[in-house]
Amino acid sequence: MGRRGAFPLLLPLVYAAAPPLMLLAGNAGQAQFSDVLLPVGLLAAATLILYPLFVAMFRSPLRGGVALSLFWLLVFSYGHVAAIVGRFPIAGMNPANPKCLIPVTLVVGGLCARAIRRAPGDPRTFAKVLMVSGLALILSSLVTLGLFRGAHRPSASASVVAPETITAGKVPRTPDIYYIIFDRYASNATLTTRYGWDNGPLLDFLRRRGFYVADDSRSNYHVTAQSLASSLNMTHLLGLSETVGKESSDWRPVFDMLEDNQVTRFLLGQGYRYVHVGAKWPPTARNRHASVNYKFSVLPEFSAVLVSTTAFYPVLYRLGVTNPDREKYERVNHQLGILSGLPRRQGTPLFVFAHFLVPHGPYVFNRDGSYRTPEQVTAHPEAESYVEQIRYLNGRIEGLVDSLLAAYPPGAPPVIILQGDEGPYPERTHPHSFVWTEATNEEISEKMRILNAIYAPGCEASFYPAVTPVNTFRLVFNCYFQTGLPLLPDRSYAYHDLKRLYDFFETTARIDAVGK
Image (tube, rainbow, N blue to C red):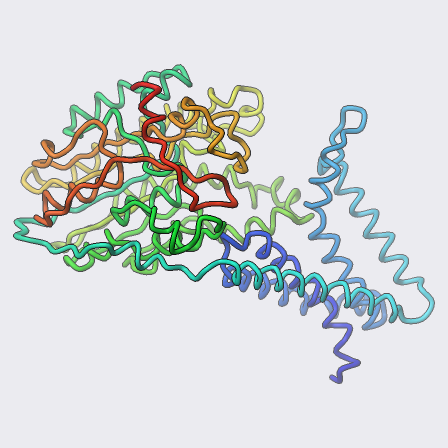
């Protein structure tokens, strides 16, 4: 096929590749270039399959190529059009409703197809305009990615995550260790004052089972990525302000710290087998150092977000294929089931990291464990839905704790750490573009006071009410591995805003000012 003959096929391939690259460019600080490989590959394959059909339908390679290009353009512009027209209700009706917008999209597609079929001669000029426009979209995306990469220094996280050498002393036994994160699980103080829910029964249950409940604990950072990067590396992140830069909006340094963290490195060096029970969120979805990665989602989050912008999404959603809320409901239950029945190898200690995106929204659980529909969530205040999810989760936590403890002989109990990585977002701080230096003390307290309960038999005397996650593994390692690590100050920090992720300011005193 010559250059002239290849043109009609290249045209729709350009329009198939452009949307993933544009999504990547819009999320340059969080997504990786590798994220586009799957969707680009699938879309290219779909284009190669559809192209002969479009050529046959329009009786011309060029007309077929133009029609297929416009098909991809309509499919991927659907979500963006919906976001715009949804701002302008017509007679009380939302024009972005799929019942309205899908028929409009079909009509536009039909009119385009008719115009292509009836156009006199091959639409070569129009095809050239399309090609230039499509290439411009790709080029602008690549330029945006290049400028972003150039403006942000390479990750220097390695100089921050290994500030000291960890050396084990005499180790009488190596207990299995479970580090279980319940995303946005607030402290009892927050639940009582903000949500009207007393979490005392769960905390009393944990105490009866031998857990130390740190009633005054708070996260060291107010967002998941920074919080977990800190706890899993047993360090504060203030060094990133210098190595990455206060003006940086690049999440990659903390994502790197999650992937290659100090806790995992130490435990692997002690002969542990690492089991990773990931969330759908890409930074914790899997870990390359794990012996086993459990996952539930078929599509990675980047691909799922891309699908959600297309005209296919409303149809697939109605069919139950791409319902993220239903998927979350099933995924969390799946994760809990995995933890309760993990296989253990005789003589090989186990390190389990599990990240649950609950009670983090969307709220998909009623207190009895039934699915909480979006209609139910909309009909009730957000605080009520949050508490419903907490009440269900508490019952599952109690069952999980009992099943884990029952799996071990009395003389060889595990270590179980149940922690929130952050608290829920106060109402005024939505969306995420909120400037945190403008938050009130009460808002910062709500965002950073967390659940923190640790089962570590023989180590109870080391814990204290205000212990924070940065010291969790320092205390555990000192107790079981005689590492002699000094404790760090239990300080808390927040960033300025999403454009200045490493411009930290301390929030410790402001949280304490609210009271316990």
